[in-house]
Image (cartoon, rainbow over all chains, first blue to last red; front, side, top):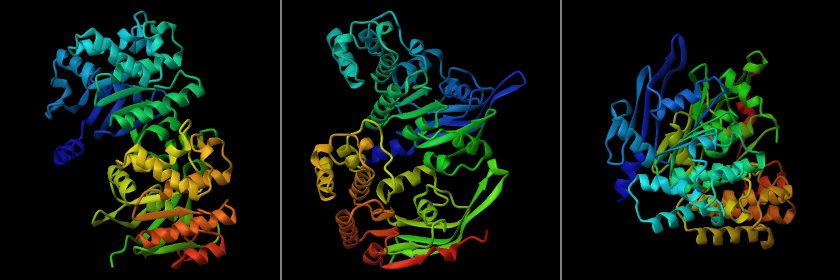
Length: 265
Length: 232
């Protein structure tokens, strides 16, 4: 078992190899390579237009690269090139072993159906069919993301922004994915709501030993959640390393500018 | 005896790109070793690079050149060239760092802030909290504060929470950046006691302390940082 754990943690889960994407003559993402290990949180930081969202789409197989490849170690231990997965396999991966938390919860939730159904839907997609168990698991997850179970039958359009975002997280985590992509998950929220969400995310990520790729322009979010950071500019990764190292001892002119632009708390 | 920390010819310069690329030399030729059960105190005036050296040993600041050797799980690892994952492993099981200020996470109760390093390393929550409570007691943080987040505590209380968090693990190396700076005499004495206990357990320590009396009581050896001053 210990050996099995070690293999599990010593092999990368996701590997990006020389990933590029261009739109005509515009290169949105150039030559990005890295390996992500189980339980590791990688933050991609940079300003709008730096290519970080394009990179997230490439990594999650939602966009086909112009060059390079992404490989993922499936639950059966076999590492596959995402480009060789069929559409059905890719969708299955997205419903089971992966999560994707959008900045706007409306993109990740079905706003008109109940909260319980939003969470339960993902379970049904992986074959659960016992209504009572689905509802129990959904209630359990609502509690874990600090949503009052009394609201289980309400649709998320009646929820506040922070609650919607927490519901989106519950919906993503209910199938116990190993990898979660997050695109500015705290982006549209008030500062106090942000702090609560960050704290919740930080605990869930550690408890569930999740690997996370999180895109954010907020360096405080990167510092609180991530182990490693990649700084992007003009589609390229210009600096990478341990999060506290890059933020406390930035080397590149652009990273120094980003770090020095933070207002003191 | 095998040194726990073995630094050779380490150099650090900051290049300030926003100030026209001026070079700010910090230290060069940093060379010293720390044995188990030894507390080395770095001395020198402010700005001599003491904190920078501690941060280099923790892997928080990068080195331009030289070696930061750390004895980690039976081998000497060069932190200056280690992969981020390895640095994180070293921090989890070998090096602890007590900074001057507590970087508190909003909403987390004091007892959990202190217990967290043990829980991360696999101890049960109840055991970790029991140990955290013991340390908080010794550091005179009243029990009624334990369930509150430390963000609203006074500077001295926050520092004691930080010390409890830093001392709770059984790590073989501890780095201490002014651990007694804003403490009263009684609490300074507790910290001196804690340092003594760590020494008896074989922990290697590097400390920055401005208080002469404290330095005298904890230092086994003084390393004068001015000899590493980079020619500006």
